[in-house]
Image (cartoon, rainbow, N blue to C red; front, side):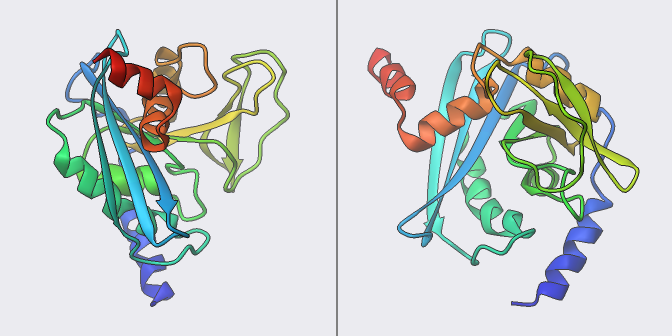
Length: 222
């Protein structure tokens, strides 16, 4: 695998990321959530995409794609491993979302191209990265109360927000993916909370991908 070529591609694509608000529809009518996991000891990549109505945050569509994993796990290059399954699931969708949440990093990446930015560029939709752990950058300690936030900084540049969504939970790392600013990204994450640690788009994507009880109940109701 030519890591030098992949690194050069990341740096080139990162320059194409639009870091300001560039919405086709505000407020968004439909919001997508994306989550990627791996099965069979990493041999199969599983991508789940959900579509929620806004502002009800009601789940109206879900798709799961499973494909053969195309490359091994290499720190800093996860998006190349994840996006093929995401694209496969995207092509299965019946609805076209106005805003996309991805469980992963946006520009809060060493070379400013996490999976949310990489995938956001490929589908050309305003995209937010919502990650559960830090990849790079530094931040000041957060207060304990929900809503506490600190800028995530690296080399004098703000890469996103470190935001505590819920009491007694580790913070989330919210960043521009594509066609949205860091401040607006955090605003929309806040708009899509329903009392859990994760915003509803990525919470539902995880529930669909993993067959969690909330999704199984939703299926039974349908």
